[in-house]
Length: 130
Image 1 (tube, rainbow, N blue to C red):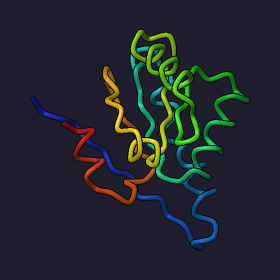
Image 2: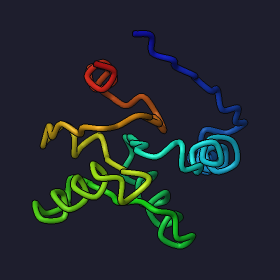
Image 3: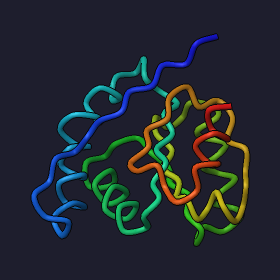
């Protein structure tokens, strides 16, 4: 079994502009490729809570089929999001790195994973690839 990985470098002139530039890059280059129904069950792993809120709000505003889980989610909303994602009722599942660090839920049936950033713990990257 071979796993395909694609990495993108986001060019930015100022570190202060990086979150905005990264978000625009995500919207223009990455998201359109994953909106197709053939690309369902896409997990979006977001290390920064600020990036998470920005993406979550964009998805809500544009009626993109997604559920989200963060470290602030209660058990009922976590279970609902996992159920809907597992059964293909939603296209995307957004999770924060802190949620995964504290809860360690195993999220089954992720055919595709988008990493907004690799995050602070490289072991998370390895865990999801396995």
